[in-house]
Length: 178
Image (cartoon, rainbow, N blue to C red; front, side, top):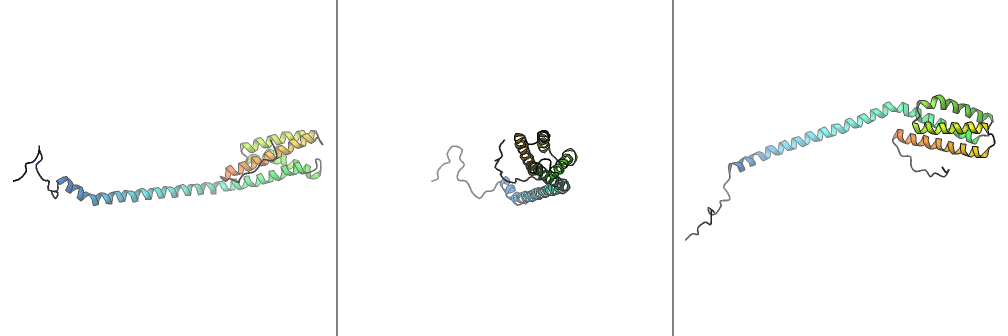
């Protein structure tokens, strides 16, 4: 004696019966896997190609800017040397006078070609203080302030190099004061 199905249950389910939808899905799995794999490979190719193009563009940008950056670095080193001579040499000595003339050339022409706003501002402040120093020879307070302005020029040159070359030169402890 068999049991009767309960409320709409048609009886035991044959687990091996395949529906047409199931058969289609099974048939599509290999094709879909190939399509998805192909799309992934294509995406990876485009992504790698894009990365290579970006690297090439950066390299070309550096190559194009390198002559300017080299000139900028050369002028910055020259400026640091001249400013250092002005604050270290005896005012009025031939060495000091040569450095002051060289500073004027850098300030009014050569450095203007490559400087950024930070360097420009520091150079302008140094120039004002240099004028005061010329007008007040022997004034120790004016000389101390000129030294501070020289230090600020050097720091501005360093910051400009870091920004232009996209490098971090490392920390410098400010022992010179504000």
